[in-house]
Each structure stands twice: as C-alpha cells, then as structure tokens.
Image 1: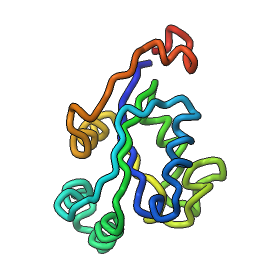
Image 2: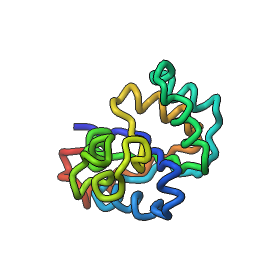
Image 3: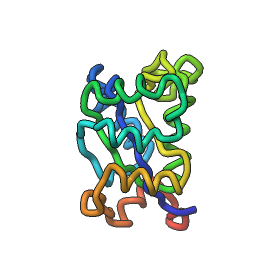
Image 4: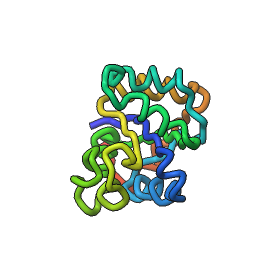
Length: 155
C-alpha cells in the first residue's frame, strides 16, 4: 500500500447547489487529506484537452458548456489507495444507478450533472493534477497526520 494523490473536480452542479463543503467533508471524514484546493473558471481549451477522449461523441460540446457554466472547485486529495477510495465514495457515473451512501447516490439523478469528476487511474491522476494545479499549489502533509487513520505499516 502507498499513499497516492488524485484529482477531484466539484462540478458546476455542486457549486450551484451549495454542496462544496458537504462533498469535501465526505472525503475528509473517510480520512483523505486535502493537499490542494482552488476554485477556477474552466476554459473551452482546457476542457477540450481534459475531455479529448470524448471529442467524437455527440454530447462533447454539451459537457464543455455545462462545465463552463460556473467555476468548479479543483481538489487534490491524498491517502492510501486514494484513487480507488475516491471512486468508491463517488459511486457510478450515472447518479440514477449509484447506491445510496455514495456521493452520486445521495446527490445526483444525472449521468452528466453527477457532482464530481474523479481520476480513474494513477497515470490519469498524474496528468490531471498537472492540468489543474501548478507544482507549488500541491502540498505534502506531515506523515504523522496519518496515524489517526491507518496502522503504522499501512502508509
């Protein structure tokens, strides 16, 4: 096991519904650490890069328009197996199929307006963190802070 950093974007639907603190607290209560946090207005150029894998889909522009409707909150989280933990907490992409207790299961009825974007793999997380944060905007917290959440041989 090792600690990882991962990216979460709190989408415009989260901002519009005043759920920023609620969603971040779900990750913090689980034991993940916020090591980067900022609100930002996304641009068409940045979103074209971020969603390049969807460029040939008919809903590509709709997603970009939705993601530019308000600022988003970019959150860098750190913890043991952080990527998997975040994705488990978030639940399936389609909020209608997400189980109660997951973030999407509790707050979303939509496939698109589904509260958060979460990196899906270590390689993706590394690329996405660089896309949304400069190096000096990410922090390393003291290791002794992990003792409340993990056994000493887990981190």
